[in-house]
Each structure stands twice: as structure tokens, then as C-alpha cells.
Length: 328
Image (cartoon, rainbow, N blue to C red; front, side, top):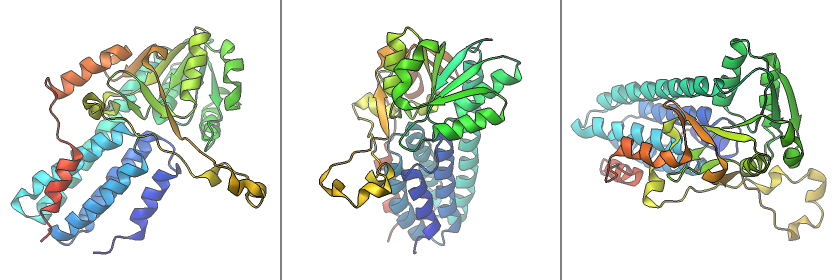
């Protein structure tokens, strides 16, 4: 079966950051997998399509623990449903699981945002970066509760999605200021709290997020400004329990190189565009989750609660191997 061009368009949008929010990225990925299942004509076609698309999807956003966790859950459900060899049963179960995961993602995000909103007080200035639906929701809840506060946003290059977040916040009626990333150490002295979104939380409590996050946390630590990550436990990475490292993606050089410079001697210059970085746990004062505010040091305890001790969870590679057995 020839894979549809729009499947690859979604993956390309995820890879090149045209979908900003990690939550929206994962929802797009789950919907893509279900579309493949829905349009499959046989087990053989489904196996071939998923074994091709799933690795590409994960490579497009390798930093996203929520993507890995949710894709693994959905594909595992597909594999389990396929034991009787009936394609219609797989389609039904995949639909149910995809909707279940969507609801879980949204619900956990809303609870986490509610937890974080409690930290916002009248007169506060909150600094954030990039574009996060959970952070946006936390501000929305606080605003709805009548709290009077301001938000500072870094432009968040490469991508400059901070402008999109600032525009959304301004539409909500918030007093918003945006500034260049390099000014964070200058501006941090005016800030009361830092709210950071998250791509992943490692087992040691480290935060993986948009590049520049670690500099914000470092500046905040120096200025004694409290820094909080907003991350439901579905963003905790179980793979890091086994020593796996979170892969940090890099963008295309053309995304930061002005057109007028491309024809000059820039071909001799190496250009790197990191998209994500890692913030050490000692620079994070707390992590807001659906379970409440937890210390970075408590992440390992929560992962033990979820996966048991010794840790037991199936890897995506094992699931893919089962899918391959459907091909004749």
C-alpha cells in the first residue's frame, strides 16, 4: 500500500516545529496513527504502514516523552487487538484507545494547569517561554479567577513561537511583554516566578524543553526567582530509568540564516540550530503535575509507582517486532 502524502505532511510539520505545542504535537501523532488504521485494507498493509510511519513519527519529535508513551500505548493496543486476526476489531479498539488517550492528555493537562494557577498571585510577573497549551491554560484559569498579574515571554528562537503565545495572552486581556532571548538575565530581576513547559522529565528530575530554557532557569536561580515546570506524569520518561538518553533534535540551518547571507561565503561556515536543551534538576524548584507540586527528586518515586519495582514496561521496539509478524 502506498502511504498518503498527507501522512508525511503531518510528520514534516512536527519535525520542523510548525506545530508548536508538545500537547498538540502528540494529539496530531495519535490521530495520524488512527487514520492509518482506519484506512488499512488488510493486516499486511497495516503492519507495513505502521512499521514505516511510527519510527518516522518518533524521530520527528524524539524529545517528547508524551509522544513515546502515548504512541507505545496505542500501538500496543493495536497489537493486542490483532491477536484474533480481525481487522475490524483492530479498527474498533484503535478508535477507542485513541479517544481514551486524547481525553487523558487533555484532562491531565487541565488538572496540571489548575495546580499551577494556584501559584499565581495578584501583582505577580510570571516569565515563560516557547508555546505551551498547559501554561496557557494555567494563565487562563488564573485570569478567570480574577487575579491581576503580568506575563513576560521570551521570543523563543529558533521559531520565535513566543510571539504566538504573547498574541494569545494579549487576546485574553493579559498585560504581556515580549523580549529577546539574550535579555533574560537583564529582565529576570523583575520576575516573581518562572513557568516552564516540558517535552520530557527524566528520571533524575531534569527538564527537557525548548532551547533557552536552561539559561532562563540558570538566570532565575542566580536571581533567587522560583522556577516551576508544568508536566503531567504522562511526560515522565520511563526509558531514562534504564539509562537511555533523551535525543535532542536540531533544526535546519536555513531556519536562522537570512536570505541575503545565503549567497555569500556562508557555505564555509558550519551552522547548528539546537531546538531543545536540558535543565538540571537543581535549577527546578518544583514540577506541577496532576498529582500536585512535586520535587524533581520525587520523579523517580513516581516512576516506580507507575512501572513497579523492578521496572517493567514493554519497549516500542518489542511492539514493532510483533507488528512485523503480520506481514506474510
